[in-house]
Length: 501
Ligand code: FAD
Image 1: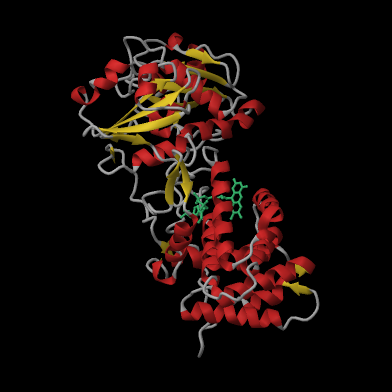
Image 2: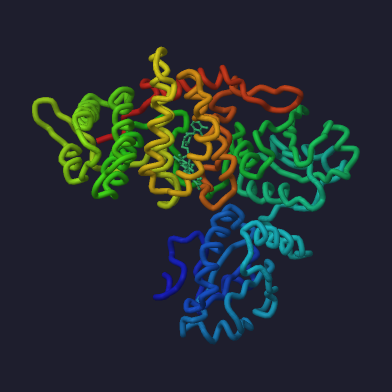
């Protein structure tokens, strides 16, 4: 476990090393190691810890080739060992090649204040400096040649080969290669834009871009919304026949379904946790809560006792006169009643479709998006309505109550820019879909991305093939197909009740 006062804990996606494990781990290892020597009292180290933790999460999949670790040199037990490794200041980052022989073999990496991206790239650069001691689990990282590609399927027993065409200074191809190293039946190679014969053969005009070769001789451009790391890996990991090696994490929920447990958890959290932060609601917040509950009472396709609950809260709010509501009064109305006509919303939070691989991922924000998509889609069944009814309620809720203030600001920016151009309930559902995709694109590859649930442009082809079409070799959305898909996906019959109490 972590020494008391250490900056990292056993739950972090990195290896905690100490006096008795440091040498035996990093020396003579078949993988490379990247070790942060820190001191828990050092301010720089405290600031740097979130970056190091995020870097470790970001390249967790690379671990058979390179491991990320930490040593607390402030722990008395470790002090002598840190001296043996030549550590004189904190934090010190050292890269140990696979099969390193002695503590002196570590190379200092000078990026302590730097971005995750720079650190990741410097790891790749260090991996490439291996010569005869190349880590056995590390796939080749050098650019592929014409000859190699020509004979590839004769010498490699895989179904797929992904070629990432890029300029010399780009790291994308190598990152995706490493991201895929634990996956079987697929190989990834980078091809430089200067490799004219291959560029011509595949008709490549954009760098980066990528092609999928199949061992039956066919090839096609890999259809991604953005030529970016998480989009490529998402696509490649889901190819039929591609499986993750023996390290497979626990089974993920079915992404083609909506789960009632997520939706009810969102309602509970929104009404009883987020709204409860304000001991008295006034002005805008009263208006926002009324609008939010009104659309819930009208459109939420809940279980009967949940609908009773929402309608009774709605009735109560409609009768509130004046512009203040103490939460103490609202709280009574939000209490479950189990008599003649039960009005119940569970007090539990259970994430199913929104379960993250770590507690700080997904959960509430994921369920809030799901809830509002569902509401915009349910509203399309009532044609002659104010097209902004649901979007307006969402805007008000997010602005007044959503605890992620940075999210609220971004969302308000998008709303102010174009929400009033929405002319119909169908357009409202599409507006929310396209803005959510904008958020996904902005967040792809950042630290808020759950590595098990990459931020992709949604719905991906395996959920909705007709949603994607290609015009002039560019992938575009077929919005009519997207609308049809949204209506089927966010429909009551696609909401699964398992996991609800
Ligand atoms: P989410 O993006 O939460 O999506 C949830 C589910 O909705 C997905 O699993 C998928 O099934 C479905 N889905 C995905 N895309 C679409 C789509 N385009 N249309 C319909 N359904 C879709 N985080 C930040 O770091 N910065 C921000 O500025 C920010 N702004 C936000 C604004 C709002 C209004 C909300 C609700 C959240 C915001 N977040 C922001 C949080 C972030 O968007 C995610 O909700 C969070 O990171 C969890 O991501 P996730 O992987 O669970 O998927």
